Length: 186
Length: 101
Image (cartoon, rainbow over all chains, first blue to last red; front, side):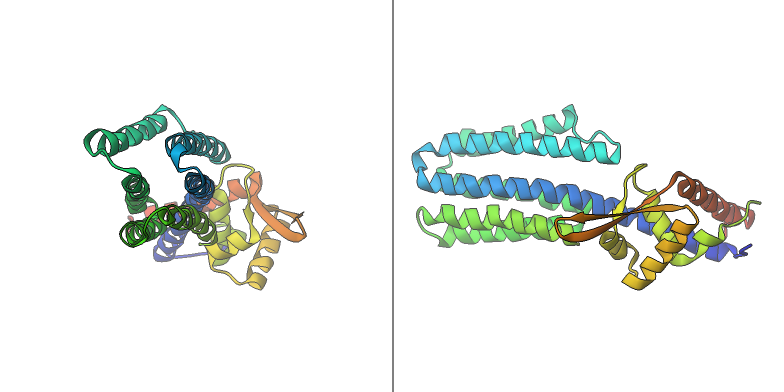
């Protein structure tokens, strides 16, 4: 039989708590990485499609965003089943709807943004939420969010004309894919 | 007071069991992920998983993903029970001392 003093017992319980927290974060990163890679592929395709047929930008981005929500909902649902928790419910759907409603209010109703401003606003707006999520779910979200915000602003101010769409395909689409792959490894 | 489980009490085995117990029943962790979570070396982790497997506390599943071998470790029902009892004993030790651990 093993005998230990209360100090050692407390240390063992602390070790357990620390590992449980790490496992929880690892599972959050795992699910988030899948969502980020899927979003990255959609955004990359959206920017390239918009570069090729700029007049269809409105339809392209509506399709990209609808698909983005549908894919995220599917991944949330599957991820929730794996951990035995319901991750996607009406509150998550309402959060998505409020997010988009506020974005449309700012960019189209109050702001009357042009295509270039739209191209910068939406990624920055998305990444703001990544940064806020990072305050609860881990610093990797903040690092990814800030990096994409800074690169988006660099493109907005220094990349002229339609090349901005290709810049955003690389920075936002490619950035999300690379970040998702990186998140799997940490 | 209940006794501590000698198999689980070893620090790395305790971390392994804590990580596996944090997953839903039936779910497992890949060897490489478990290594990262516990901070163990390959050899050390392998040896301790073997000890836990011999005691019936974990199940080890080996498969090929593409051409890469993949080892997945999961806690068995017996392992989960033993871990829960071990944690309860640790809590009892602290409680018996008046919570001054």
